[in-house]
Structure formats: C-alpha cells, structure tokens
Length: 340
Image (cartoon, rainbow, N blue to C red):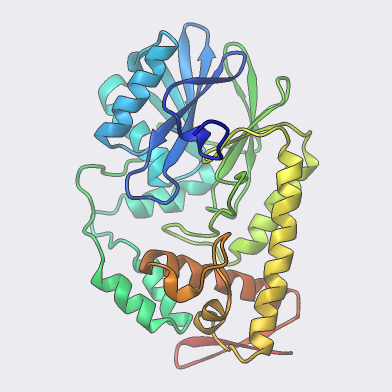
C-alpha cells in the first residue's frame, strides 16, 4: 500500500503537527472506510476532535492508537465534535459514560440531536418524506423495505455544552477558533488553530470526495446554498493544513476549497442541462447524471446512495431556483422544475 491514496487508513497514531496526532478509526460496512480522530496534547490530558462511531472495534483502535503516544482512554478530558453524525459523535457519548469525558457540540446541532434523542424516532423518516417530494417513489419504497430499527446500543444523548460559534476555545497550550460551517449539517463546525496553521475540518472539506449536503435528522431549507457560503467563508480564513475527518492530511485548505467550489458550479451546469433535456423532478435528474468520481450510472448505486444522490440533486435544483435559472412547481405532492 506504500504510496497509495489509501495510506491514511493505516492504524496507529500519526503525528501531523507538534502535539497533534491523527488516529483513523474503522467504519464497518461504510464506503468511507475510516474516520480520523485527532488527539491534541493539552497539558497532561488529551482533547479529541471527533471521537468515532461507538463500536467495539472502534474503541479498541482508539485505545491502541493512544497507546502509541503513551496515553490511555482515561487521559481524554474533552471531545470537541464537529457535527452530529454517528461516526463523529456516538463514541464521545460512550467515553463520557465510561470516563466522564466532557462532550461539546455546536449549538446549531440542537435540533438534530434532540430529534435523534426522541424514543419514537424512525430512522430516515425525514429523508423518506423528501424522496416523495422528489418523485422518487421507487427509492423511497426500497429504503422503507430495508429500514433498520433504532439501535438501543448507541442511544443518542445531548452534549455537556453547546459551543457558541464563532467563538474561541481556550486549551492549555493552544487556542482554537470554532467557525460555523453549515451545509453538511446545519450545525457543522470547523476548528481553526491559526497559530499552528491547522484546520480541523470535519466533513466540511474532504481531500478526495465531495461531502454530502443536508443529510441529517432535521435538514435545512437550502443546504447547498449554506454549504457554498461556508466554503467561501473558509476560503477567507488564513490558509492552513487540512486535517479532514476522512482522507489524508493535505497542505492547503484553500486549494481544496477552490476545487469544491468549481465542482459544484460544474454540477449545477450538469443539473440544469438535465432539466433542459427533459428531466422534471429531482429523481429524473438524478437518473440522468453520472455519480461518484468514476461517473457511475444511478442504477449502479445501492439504495442508500441512490437516496443521497436524489437529495443532492434536489439541493442543486433548488440552488438553480435561487439563482433564477429554474423555477419550481408543486402538484400532487411532487416538486417539478421547469425553465423560467
């Protein structure tokens, strides 16, 4: 695997800056394969940026990674979580239950967390509703047929504190700036260590893939518009090393942000072309577009990724409406897009 784009998956604790170590944790049955947790030396304790998914194999990998730097799980004092997805948040809750770790999350995630904590929560219920508006009944029906019950092993809980952002977080040896970057989720945060030239980017800026937009318990009204504004905001910050949640560390946040902005402009143009070619709903447009870096047809995607594809397409169509390049009409509870 030497020199391959998958080197970042190698277990252990990888020093990325003085006092900062990247620990990749496994994501079983997930195309992302791993999530990076960053362990920051903070006096005689550790602060984590994100914590991983609360699974036995993830806990074991975190424990062994910390052992590489002479630390233990009990040395963690706090977890700063970038956003409320299970591969970032749930192991923080597990660590709190076992060791009393302080868990901190952006205030913008309150609606998502409180929805996830509901005992009557139905997984992906909101996404199923949105698929109906997108005219994607086949995807919705397939999703319902494969729905998994709510896990009782990893019950969601509220954090110890809600981070007010933008704002400063004072650690023993460094200062982090919490910057709100809605889009991937409404309350997503990145953490800027300006003095050391580091950006803990969560899922906002990823080096090899484009993050999903608005896949959350309580999606916003215009997630792509939010995401593009957030990208531009990060581009206005001082450039820094990119410390992403998925993928390798790279040297320039600005370079990758520019690539992501260009990607979405190209995708908007492709989506508009699909409508000009006869697609009227987000489902029809998604079926007309290529997917993944390999340009796969929609029919080759599994049902979960078909769901993401339809909802991503709807977000792009809605952005085209905001730009007055399309308009939308609703009939029979299905949204259709037409030329202005």
